[in-house]
Each structure stands twice: as C-alpha cells, then as structure tokens.
Image (cartoon, rainbow, N blue to C red):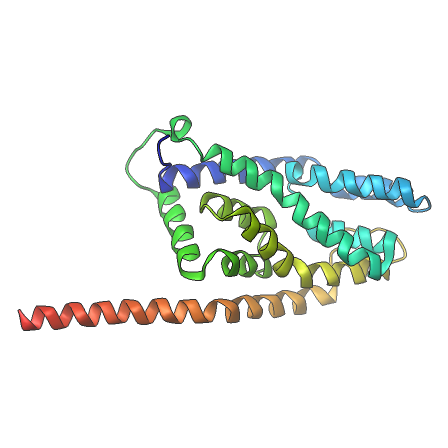
Length: 239
C-alpha cells in the first residue's frame, strides 16, 4: 500500500470537512431541537432522541455544544455531564474513521501535482503533532475554540492513535461540556443560542489552557531549532 502524501491527506480531510459543513448549512439544528424539546417529558424517548442526534451529528457538522446543552436540559448536571461527554467522544469517531479510511490508500487521490496550499496544510498539521505529541495535541485542539470536526480531521490525517483521540477528546472537551450542560440544565426550554455571556469567557479560558499546554513542547522545539542553527554556523566558521 502506498503511503499517502501530505497533500493527499490534507485533500481528503478538506473534502470531508467541506461536505459536512455543507450538510450542516442545509439542515439546521434549531428545528430538530424544538422537536426534541417536546419529548422531554418522557425520559426514555428523550434519551433515544438525544442518542440519535449524537449519531447523526457528524454527517451534519453540527457543533457539539448545543447537544450537550440538550443533555443538560433533559438529564440535569450530575447525569448530564458524563452522558454528554460520552456522546462527544462517540460522535467524533465516525469522522475520524472516515478520514483515516480515505487517507489509507493514496490511489484514489494520486494526482500528485506540485505542492500547494493543501500540501502545506498537511505538513503543518504533521509538524504540530510531531511537536506536541498525539495526546497533548488532541487535548489542546479540543480546548481551542475551533470546530470539533476540523480538529478530528487534523488528527485523522496525522496518524493519531484511536486511544489518544478518545482520551484527548475527553480531556479537552470536558470544560466545554460542563459549561454547556450547566447552561442547558438552567434553561426553561431547549435552545441553540449557545453559551450566552459565558461563551466568551470560556473561549478565552480554554484558549489560554491550550496555549499553556503547548508552551513546553513549543519551547523545546524552538530551542532545538536554535541549537541546530548555532551548530551549523559554528561548523561553517570552523570550516
């Protein structure tokens, strides 16, 4: 089996992401969640509906935060946090597997022209995970306020192990999940309005946490690069 190039990997990830975004635009979660709201009186029916929403979410590129709020609305905080976190971890798996399958064989994407934007993007993602490490890299990408499916596609094209994806997703999505569940539990009805005033503070806090998480690997990578340049300059001088 041929090893997929960075450009092919990036292309496959981009195609999946674009398709999911297009589907999400065509199918808004607002109407669907209004229907789920009517099921809240029946815990079993509500649970089945929520499970269905998590299963179809990858195909529609819906954000995970509104679904966590729905879980909080129906199940409260104590039960809602583990349920929503399990849902988030489960819902990233189809995208991860699909992108990994697409990039597993280069024959379908073998038009190997000169390197362009996609190839550079693939190389950048690869360097990110080489520097941060798979677990730290996934966790930081989940903490950062970027679309969940973008982070999943990036992990898939970078050969991140499934166990690192699962554990890193659980760690990184935990603060977002807790906040959304709390907001949903305090709401009078299911809403897709997001986290309100809490959203900005949470985004800044999670972005700061992601930066701190990556600070060590980034510093070591920069120090190693500086050392290599210094060694190269010294050898040139000695020569």
